[in-house]
Image (cartoon, rainbow, N blue to C red; front, side, top):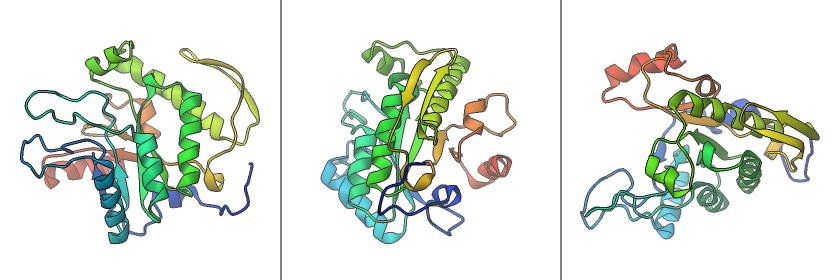
Length: 250
């Protein structure tokens, strides 16, 4: 594994724990988007501007909040509220916040079908070195057909899009591994004589997350690619409803 002067070893467990001993991790979701998660027209709604994102990240860092997780949004909803009408691309957004904080883990939320895996792997490593091992990857497969049409891309059926995401992530993990050169011959992705340097910071790879609303890890709706993540981001309407799902994922 290539090493650079000034780096320290970080364990995979430290990364997954976001360098925090707290069993309950707290994070901020969707700050890269105007309106955040509130569909409203009130004057004080979240702006999503860079000065506000930066100030929020530094406040969270000082307060001991573990992470910030952006939304992968390319096209706002329009209308009177123009909900999430202005959004920052998430990896470059993460780079800026990582450079301005000391403890916070900042994720990039990336649509696997829209970005070639080797370009993505290089972007993630760059962010990880800027943050000295505090970058996290949230992989999504997409659901908004209007966004995919913007890119001239087709939205695959549900099962196939997760199969593609698994290959995409396999390529990225190989690019992050100690291997010098490699070929990849998948069903969707075929690559020859790949070489990727530098490797992630501290001789370990960034934690990967996925977002879903699924009742149980044993559910057939949960794809293999999701089961291999370090972090599952999910939602429930009440604590009693969410508790069995959390126990299942553990």
